[in-house]
Length: 454
Image (tube, rainbow, N blue to C red; front, side, top):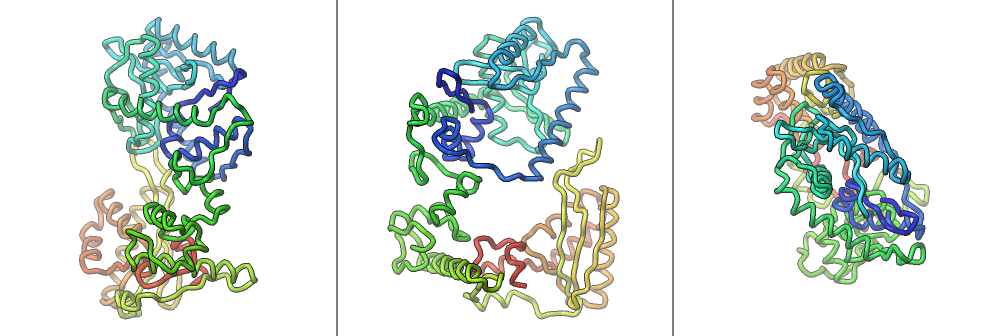
């Protein structure tokens, strides 16, 4: 999103995506562009950064394939910054000329109108002479926000009168193509576009820095509560979203009853309408314990959050200890792939601890090594069960058994053995036990956040 010299707001397909994910953050970004507030700095995410780099590699691979197939029929549009009017105008003109000349492929096709600017990865000319909008995505499945971007470019082809195909395509990271009918996407795109235009108009950009700044909690805009922009406001307003396990519907009902902050909830005496007494009591306890943990940490006390056992009976789900018990965890890289494999995600570390706190590990630096690690781990567990038939394998959340099962199916090995472990209840998920039995003064129940407890 940028502001032109004459104060006009120009948005892109990425802004359409951003508005769909968090309207509040989108409008706050506009406020920052207009000079009304400081922009929120997005924290660096190494995974997203790497995903972006791999996305460019994926896009480049597709471009190389088109170059090899169509040669001079591939027209590559020079990169243009949205704020560089001269370069942007040249890119738009080059794009339209390539389309008029019937280029087989147009790479980085550039579109610009009075309030929109966008760059399509590829426009591919089909056998009927119509152009298919294509976007490369590292993801393995289509997302609605990605489809809205494709619809935006299809709409631009219609605007400039270029024949387009009835479908658009996502060229996914696993080599597959996800095709979608434009007529199915355009109605939703148009609703999203008009919503974005209304959001922009509501902030009166013509007033510049003197205009209104959207307030946290403004009912006119939906806030996701999780992005960097929302997080600043949640923390600054001591919002109920600080409370672990708080659902948006519960937050709205509590706010309607005058309970707006975590401090309010910790001392609230009456249950809000449409919230069960048990849920209210649980949330109130959670708020109280989080505040107690905050106060203790501020006073230089122990790092571990305070906790209470609220349902002792839930602890009965933990089996009787056995000398063969293991505590098991994976570390994985969801962005790992190998050329031509079509596979993604490598669980590169199988790690476990036994009842004596002895650590064991298996490493995998390729899919071939992951298969070998799976076979060795299952052989290790099978041999251990001979000596300790009542052993259990403890884990936190369902990732470990889910991935063992998927890995066995991927490689066609150990399927019966993994199935047996699942059917015989060898795996014990500690996460639901913790959530039922304990209330911990932490804003998150992730294993890393609860690590100070153990």
